[in-house]
Image 1 (cartoon, helix red, strand yellow):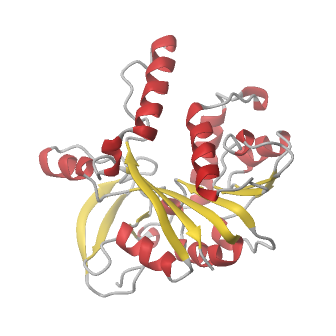
Image 2 (image 1 turned 45 degrees about the horizontal axis):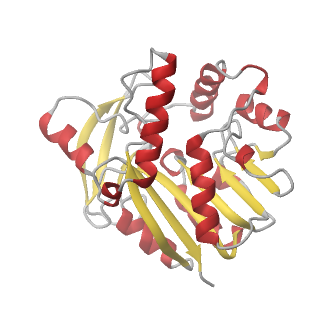
Length: 283
């Protein structure tokens, strides 16, 4: 087997991981050449579309009647993107948009479009008055360009992530912004868990998570597509909250964590496992 990203034959088996979603164990491979890690979807016969549909239905039960509430996290992302873009946003495409929460934070007089595989989630997006492509992201032929294209926690899920990365050159407009958030194994948190505990790092979750990009590979690959890295930081992703069972404390602590994730200088160091990268389309 060769690396699914750089095609190098310098790969090794790193771990055997029990899936949290299906009753199978998967082999985690790591590439010596590009430093990426990955699982092989062909190791077991699994219908990924059904896996995501089941997850979506369970998750969306907490969102009756397509109700929407503004989020400090998404509002912060919008402000950050606006600052990097340096002009008014006229169009945005959110790949892996879920129920459209992020898109709802933009004014309704601009082009707001999303990509979502789950029929259950896509229906909620439509009810919110947003346009959505319902398919695997790498299969869609986009016929327009956008000022902003975002991929929050999506590349790790794709069967053919390089096909999507290749599309960005034509989908992001000149001087536009591309935002990518991925789980990263290149951080202190993952290293500490693997080194000192018997606990499974939760980002090792095949067949939902298939790809773990290295920042080295991502920057190099997108650089060839005329994207320049503008900003980067690492966060906890709001995953730590000891007050989830106490509604008021949960909200207060959640907002505090979101603020810390967005503005803490320590997030310029690879301590946590959510990697945010902001690229500018240069030509």
